[in-house]
Length: 149
Image (cartoon, rainbow, N blue to C red; front, side, top):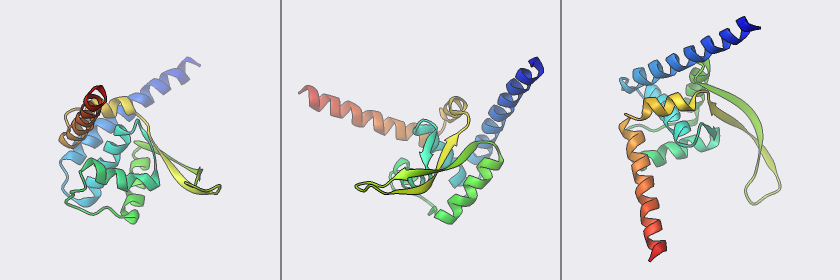
């Protein structure tokens, strides 16, 4: 039993090291595939480690203020998710999801970041991540200011 618990601890360290190394590697890449991988990690981190696949590309566009130097596609996103899952950065689960303004459901993929705390720590120095959070905080500050008036 103790060996099993020790193996879990070792496994979480490997995931953390992989995530830190992966993010640092992706920051230095200039290809679309690498940029999209980093953006997926960013949006998952911003939205507390979990997103539906169908929301990822619109959320990536939001964090960049709709000004991007590449165009993410669904096909490219699917490959990125496969790679991040293989790297043990994310988990992907097919789930049913309710349709807006309807009683129907459809299948979507729920994407989970495996180590949110580590991602936040590593991305704390990331310009895109910090600027997005700064814009959101400013919007909240302005909304509170208007509310108090």
